[in-house]
Structures are given as C-alpha cells and as structure tokens.
Image 1 (cartoon, rainbow, N blue to C red):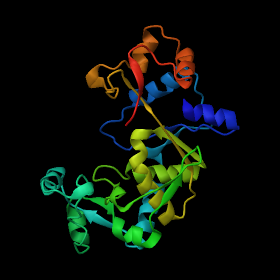
Image 2: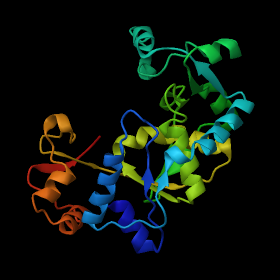
Image 3: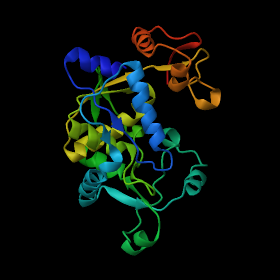
Image 4: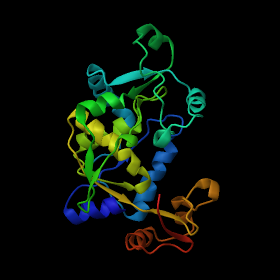
Length: 260
C-alpha cells in the first residue's frame, strides 16, 4: 500500500511482480489470489505483471557476467552439512555460510553430476566494488559493514535464480527507483546493492517500513492463525477502507506496528 501511495502521489508507476521461481511453493491459485486481494484493496498496477518464471534467461545472463568475473562459485553443501559446520561460534557472522566450497577447484564433471547452487564470493566482490551504501526514502544514507555479507546464494539447486539476483535484475529492467518493503528485508539491502554495483545497475531509493504485528509483537503468520486478506474479504471487510486505515496508521483491533 505504501508503494502504491508513493507511486500515485509522485506521478510514478506501480509495478506488480509475481515472484514464482520457487515451483514447490508457488501455485496458480495463489497467484490468482494476489490479483483478487489487490483489486479488493483498491491497488491497481501499471502495465503487465512481471512474472519471474518467464524471465529466467535474464537472470542467467546476469549470473554469467559474474561467472566471467570469477565472483561466484559452485556450492555442493546440503542444509544439514551447513548446519553442522556452524555449530562452532563464528562471531557476528555465525549464521552465514562458512565458505566450505569457496576454495574448491572448478570441476565441470562434478557440476554436471551433482546438484549445486551458485554463491557470491563476497570477499572478492567487496574487494572489487567496496562496501556499498544506500539511501532511504527520507534521505538517510546508510553504510554497510563487512559482517553484513555472507556468500549469498545467487542461483539455487532447484531454481534458476535467488531472491537477491532476480530482484536487482527486475528492479533495473523495470525502471524501479523506489523499493518499498518491510524492514525485515533491510538485511537484504547490502547484498543487493553490492550486486547492483558489480552488474553496473542503477541504485534505487529504499523505504523499509515497520511490520504489522500481533499486539504482543509477534509477526503475523498462519501458524498463529493470523487473519488472511482472503478471510477478511469473505467476512465482509471493506478492503479500500482497510487500506486507507493502514496508510494512516489505524490498525485493526489486536494489531500494532512492530519492529523486525
């Protein structure tokens, strides 16, 4: 809603992007539900929706450019192996990938036979581009620090691109100059700004907004029986009035703005 409001107030465009690269979690009925929910809230997008599953060639081209610069490497680790390797303390970066495959020699035969993802070699990337910064919509300039970066996945074993790579490619190709998203995604910004620098893509402004939470601060989640937009719609809630209330900071009973 904030993104839509900013676009309309500035005479800009509001773009709709369907992030459906995770085939195991994205289904046609879910996509259809997005269209219904947005119409119910009175949020209308400009142009055709951007469907990521139809744009995989663009993501591959971006990944190939990083491969040519020797800034990515194949990673064969399973989640269980990564979790086991992180049982020892690693300081502020303890939750980040420890670089197990970073120094492996390139082995095309192994890659052809073994599922693998592609990771950004953050040390090399930072050595080339330096520590990135970004500007929030209010003009605040924020600086990244080395501990903000792990060797992020850019292409997954089961998907042609990761969130990081697909987003920066789509933002640039779509002419996005203001990225509006929840503050829980703020930690993604340093890596995405680094990718923009490496790929020569323009830098947008960012607006990271507080999340709507339960009154005890818990994030809204299905497991906590948080009401869905579909359920509100079905129960007769006025979607446009709800959107207007949220923009003014008027929240339904039992909810509040929380910090990530």
